[in-house]
Length: 202
Ligand SMILES: [Zn+2]
Image (tube, rainbow, N blue to C red; front, side, top):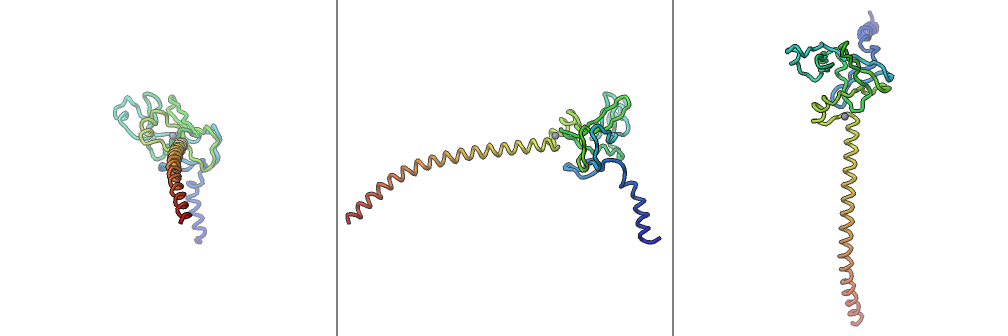
């Protein structure tokens, strides 16, 4: 086997992993890792299943399990999505998401579905809901694009307001200066005039 065919054999071996027909991949996002579209995803498409062991809140050992990836189906059943194979756990929260969770308590299944057309390279996200938001995101400040934009806008408005206040103060100071200045000028003119007269006399 020549070296090029060896390379080809190797490529063939790893190909199934890299050329998957799944329309997403795990990648770097602002807040760590995220799930990104690798192909156009049409609005309404089921993108991925959020899966893991089903926990029964009536069983104390299962009810005690705590991690960031618990997905509550209803009062009794919860999916423990912390398992490695559950790539949907990488999907980050957004307040203005391009996907949603389609929760099916009776089937004990959750699917993530596109609610907008998603372009390749775009991060996939869904709204984690108010409980999660209040418990985990509000205390540290939500980092989703929508909230970052809102914060940026507020900062810009605050800056503009501060600039306005400063300009007003400067105008006031200038006016006050001008008053003092014209008062001084009158005095100076008086002296200057006196001097001129004096010189003219000499
Ligand atoms: Zn947000």
